[in-house]
Image (cartoon, rainbow, N blue to C red; front, side, top):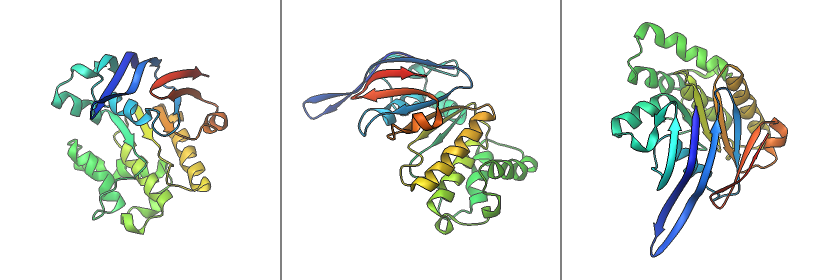
Length: 223
């Protein structure tokens, strides 16, 4: 489902070349829940961006859902992203739209029949425990509710893979635990999950396979 072989990503910062990823290789099978961890600057976000085609690797092979990601053209990258659910530390909700419309917007963009949209939006909201907030605007939501809305938006298209980049980085411990529980529920419904976090102890709590990055290198693949 996801496979990287010898992936490097190098950026030029003035005269200096910085290796954000250095010879990273791993494989993730359908239905896995994988925690990607490491300190700030370890390469977690860069790795996720490589997976959904926002960054091209400097060297190496990247395959996602049977697609050779580095070789994809712009329209093909867009098609790949429509097959993935992606959640960020910032919920990135459209402020002038209700929670319902933030989620329905995705389905409309995909050409989903209007007769199906309401049921699918509320199914996604139910899965994240946010059905009662469908008509609220982002400014009326707590940070935890905003992240639940972002998760609902990510899964409404029923993607085979969910990529979550520090989704609880702005939340207190209680809210973070709630979001992690929601992500676990999404995983048990059959979605493959990669959860990036700087919280090294989260792996022990969730008891999932853990990939540890350090200065762009994969130093541990455990569980």
